[in-house]
Length: 437
Image (cartoon, rainbow, N blue to C red; front, side, top):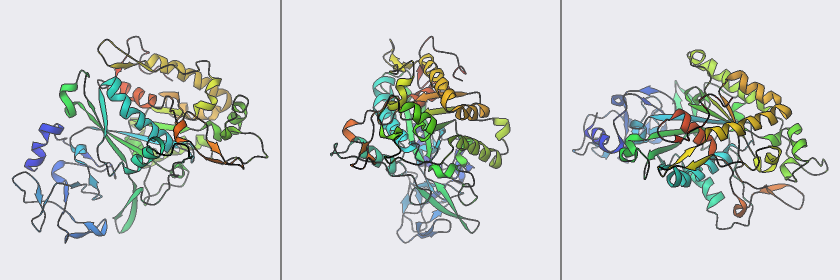
């Protein structure tokens, strides 16, 4: 272990005894960490290709603790000894918590993740005394581009759409393992740490965690899409919670009910006008995800299904069907100057959403509650408005000036309260753990 990694303990906190690679999920000791060459002549890695800097185990260091590559150039970049992909330094010091976002194609996963992170970047420091920051800007570049499109767009009057998440391309890393190419999904990496009036603010990063979030293409969860060469959903077994995005507008029964109260083009029932045809059974996604965990991880049955957060999307158009509409604020400020989350309110809304789903899409409720008793149903609207249409009635995107997300922060706040105690407080009188089913 280098002096540099020891010195970083004063800034980032103690070095973890075991590291989990956020790319391939290999667990290793810090002493086995590879370093990445900096000299321009040292190109050609046996796993990553001829144009990628070489990875190496160092035996020489600078007085500052940086490793020296074989040409004597110092480097501070680290990589996994199994897949050779680069790992941010924060992963070596902050205990990671993994979250998986899953759902059918076109269910709105990327919209949800983008708006949730954008909202939390502002809300957490203002209300909760927490800072949510990018652990590595390169890993989060795609998400930053999405945030710019929706929230920092200079032209707020031209409809925009987020691109569909593909199953191949630059959203993935390709590694040669056993002589064959293996494709790994690029994760989003964040740090969350106490600041300001937070009771643990003096700890800084020492009291923080690393958040590792995966957003797969919906097609990745369809039966038969997982393979040894494309194990892009095997993060599911590591996850502290699954965020399953259910899109009611993809279901004909739900759409028929919502069309009585909403003229949103996503729920139109006029067969003479164009509408999206989505032939995917959304309950199959949940069953397939759990089947993969059972196939690839021996300890899955013992560990059990991770907690499941069913995120019921596009609530701006169907939410008036709920008796608790408009949705109550899921948190409030306390006398300590930081906000606390009302689990009681979230549970109350969850029961109302569950009753509505049981009436119109009972197979989703059955699929979720067959897998685990620890289920909560949370309504969100990533945009808070209907999409725009062209002269032919076709959906062309959302106006940035109209976007007002609703309850998108609630799934992660709920998860932080329950599974990362001490970071986000629970309001006194909230429902006991496990009452959200």
